[in-house]
Image 1 (cartoon, protein in one colour):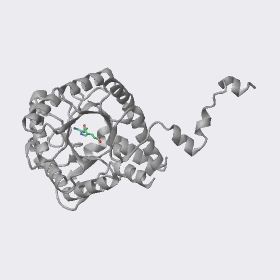
Image 2 (cartoon, helix red, strand yellow):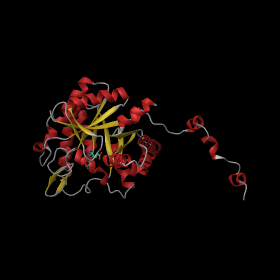
Image 3 (cartoon, protein in one colour):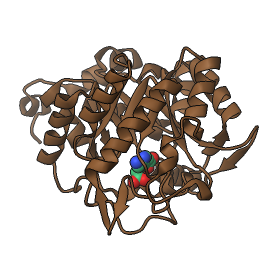
Image 4 (cartoon, helix red, strand yellow):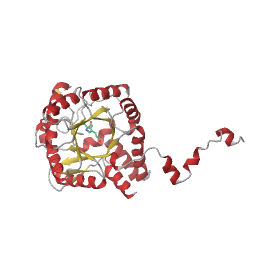
Length: 333
Ligand code: PBG
């Protein structure tokens, strides 16, 4: 048998791992409530929730309960929430025109939260998919998602969202030029302080399935989103998208989905050194919850491990449906 000290040259990596205190002392990344953004689903009505079947533990909330959720988030130290509407089918049409209604569900929620819980950051998604009858993120003409007309509409919608109280506009549609158009529109409308978090790198992923049930686009979507979201095989393209969005005026950038794309997060952070976020999407949530429900692994440990992975990959924060759970666990210690 060789002598281990000869093999390792007397280097013993396990020395620092011996005690809880020494592991804490050498720990490189930590997760805090400040890292969390909580996405919530909104429905019409009052004092009512609807479970999302594909997302165990997630419920759609009426506006009043969304205000309560915002209050809860503040109490837990979560800096911001992101709102996603599920509007009645009859309000959805070919062009997603309801997004241009200043009093649409998403804008009413922003107003209510702003009035009742002014200390929380409100992030609104600007994309047509919850508003179109075909579930696409853009205007559909002759089988094509038309870019420029969609961008014009998104820019108008962004101004309405800012008027309603959104602090950060988060375009999730991947149309070319939308960040620049939204920046100009916001500035011209007097909202130069409203920030843009760009879904700069959004992949044509299968992990969005449960979300589509949550916002009610699942049964509607015809075809796929491959002509506007990025091919999961590509990484250089993610950098080009991010570069363009930053040039056009994005204040923060996002990579979506999260866990399967940690390599992209690292490249984006190393290349641009800007505030970088991951969206741990619905499919990632449901996958973990399914495993927890089956007793395959420990809920707290596995979820906290994913949070740590995002931090390690270079994230400044994570959009995650686990946000209130994680913040609660952190608070309890
Ligand atoms: C579309 C949008 C998607 C998500 C949020 N906004 C993707 C899609 O439906 O194609 C996904 C969020 C999730 O899966 O948690 N603009």
